[in-house]
Image (cartoon, rainbow, N blue to C red):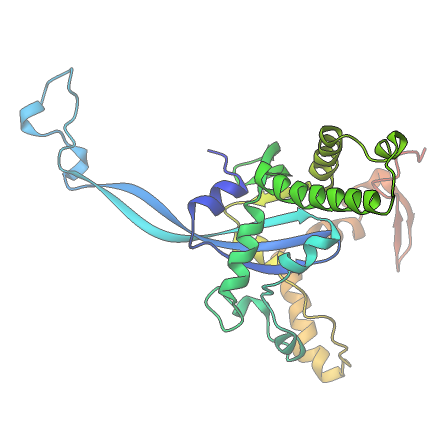
Length: 294
């Protein structure tokens, strides 16, 4: 069953949200939410039917001794949003890594939803913000990937419209109060109320929409890739460092066989048809993306 962001947030009041990366156009959030996993614990060996129903073709096996067991576990999901700039402040209000930790080189993975950096109020504010949108499924890929378009709910639209209508009416009254005599042409300076609200509703609903990618459940590898970077560190490599650290690492990669395809190219065992130059110190092959090469 495919889930959407709203079903996670609305059904899990204990859902904890942390900001991984946030920019003017994109935001990645980590959701940690409890989930009930149900399974059946059969006390009867090999699921054998009881004697009272043994041989009864209509009733089949009797699972009267089978117990339904519920286990509460925590699932983590990733929410990737294509946002508009004024969403940045609230979506980035609960960062998984503080400025101090970043300066000290402490990895963000250490800061779980129960760590010192976690802000419950900021998490609740982000959840409340996201629940003000409806999520329309656009496509899905596999069991855990789904892509949605988020639209403001009617309640959110009405809040914004009420504010704008009040501003509109106040401006109208101020304009009328500055004129000693109101002419019919002055009335036409302002659009009719129904027309104004209709135009406003259409504008806000499009302006407030954004795209969402949901990965649920997310694997530790997927979460690790989405974690914020600690930045860059410049290391001066010494002969000793190369011999004791770098060279063993390179050798482990070679021994694993994960780059054997490179060795096959160098030894001209593969892709002979793409070989242009075979020198004793180097080779030149046609790029696989070069479709127009003769």
